[in-house]
Image (cartoon, rainbow, N blue to C red):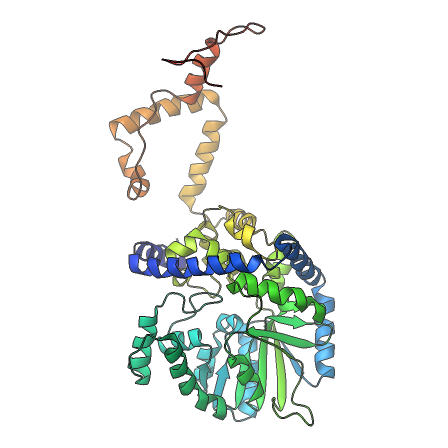
Length: 482
């Protein structure tokens, strides 16, 4: 068992028994489900919208080379500077070099999972550059020195009391649980950073190939301040974020808003294609786009599973997952949590350390049923398990156990003998040490008096010969129920 798997098991055991934590998550999830159900009613045909959204992303993923070249070409025409990063180290080096060349001392950041993926904040801090998260949830997480808990709502695990305590202890703010006042505390604190920052860093919800622009969507307005006020704007974009045409946003923005938060549209939607032009009153002097691979082309090469790159990071699969709701976001110990994280993390970071995530699933299929771009998530979890076995990453005892099981079930006689011995062992309590992992949290049903095979044989001998009709069996005390 790897250290990451041990850590996961340990954290899952703790969090699944943490009743207050689970109560906060259940309450937030209930609010989400109500909002999304209401949001879907705005569509004449939500399933048709999902199918069309999936088709747009499928087209891009299967022609990614062409759309990336088109995106780069149009960005350059717009005056942007495009950089290609093969991995996290290269992406950080590019961004740090841009910062050094402009004497950057302070960076304001929007919420961006891809910057979390490459641990950009740590790299900036090591270079002596102050990096400030400006999304309210991310700001709280930064104050607590925690990563985001969730793809969309990074502080889902916290209550208003937790917010108030952090602001009081870290910022000296008065104690309050009024949502508007809490927001205003953060707004007043962040304003000086917006006004003095030398660089703004964002991600991109979508990268639109046709006009060569990035599409950004938010509810707080902080992203617009991140790219309009500083002298330099850097957008770190995963190569899978492309869509072909700007008109595709007419569908994808509402689908993302509905699946992500239940909104018809998020409050602010922006398109950025280049630096400030002559006559414009705001915007950066330079606009840089860093296109990041970091394992995505490995997933692209997998024909069976490349549709996982269609993900639009709405978080719907996390919100429907019973495992995520039980163990929480931090238990996964990776940037992308929940079902989508369990699917893509082994591809992005290697099966050796992360294959265990694909086993942290009930395979109920809820994630697949809610995905707005039709990613077959629970099937991919099974494929990841298969891949781990093919790479011999499963434990030796498990391989031996399955070989023994195969040998047993390939003979009816052997299977029957072992079944009898097993039922006897259960009645005598001999198996108790082996069943303890199950019975620690569940009841073990009593062993049956006979096997299914024995019951079936007895039932068959009691049946009349072919062509004869058995007399109707009357239940005690009344006629046959039809």
